[in-house]
Length: 242
Image (cartoon, rainbow, N blue to C red; front, top):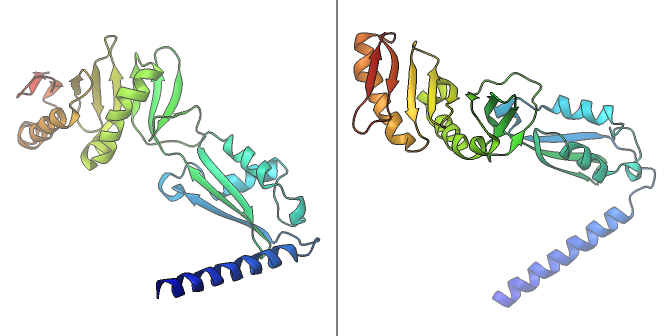
């Protein structure tokens, strides 16, 4: 029974290969591209790179395939141009039997912007890769202060990933400040206070204490009672009153 099934599968596979070969070989030499079909991965989640951006870029570079002979369309040239865009992680281009050019684009997702005292200004994506420039406004935390690229790609990446994964902190934290000795302070959107996080690491424990303090402390005395809230100590939260 297994041999019979294997034989059937092989016959079907061979038949498909023959059909595909004939279909591709017999396509007209003067076949014109009917249009471009774009597949943007993560574009709906980020909004930093859209299908309109891709089409505009290809037109600007003279690579829009629509209306051109398919034989004259270079998929490699299209991929090369798109892969040079900072917000694109990778792209793939191919032609279909129906006469379309398909372009698949995987977008990067920035999760942190860095504006360092040194003048360095860049973004970090989910994998810790640097994005030099983004044309559209971004609503992600901004890291300022004494931030090196190495510190941002390691320590701050871990923190940004943690903040992004939590609904409360993703909405609450808008700025990360790095001191000269590489300790971290957080600036919240709600409340006129600074959160002293201390040295990098142990974020779940430290921010877990802060969550409890928010729920049981600030909800009773008010969000503007303290100027600084230190969560770097073990088993306690230390607030400095205004």
